[in-house]
Image 1 (cartoon, helix red, strand yellow):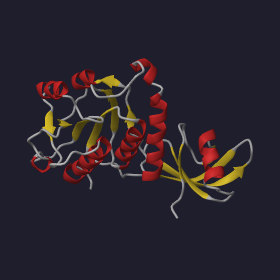
Image 2 (cartoon, helix red, strand yellow):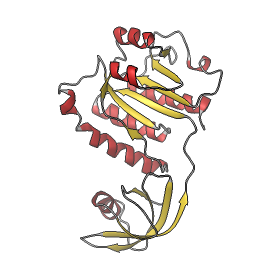
Image 3 (cartoon, helix red, strand yellow):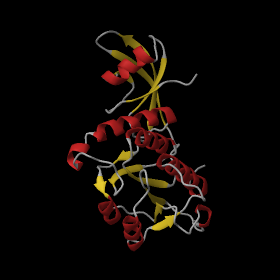
Image 4 (cartoon, one colour):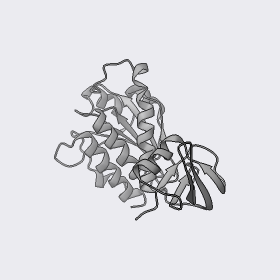
Length: 242
């Protein structure tokens, strides 16, 4: 059985560490850990701390951190997922698997087919929910660096502000297939993925005008979460650490 891992947004050092409310609840009431159980704690700076639960009470769950070490399991390919906001379950799955596949940044965007009834300002409460998805996926995947979640922006803003050595967008109408795209190594890729329905023809024309390269994934139409997972895995296999 793997050792449970907990992200804590604070400075860590050897010795006693009180878990925050969410981690304390999960450790005791979900995982049923007891005093003496081994755990790993990290704060996103690349180090892990191994320790044991030393106190479990109604007021606090304390871990005694006994050993620290650096973890080097991040891909040398900087992957930036620019994901059009999709339905809740689709978006959650996309973010979870993107973190498992090693993305370094995620920028949610509003596209023509994003089904958003609230104003953009009202919708930003989703950021907290998505951040929790990213942290949970990082804990499960053994990552010690938390992928950066950027604020929600428009598709046009993303085209104008997001930079990378190669910028791609998925389109079933694209002529280029994934295996023909990379003849030289790349250090950074920004990948634009549409929501349900993909990107509109207007958006695809705008992307091409801004020097993004269109890419297709075979002859079948993929769901948005499937498309993101598939292309991220291909990118890591061709250019990253898979």
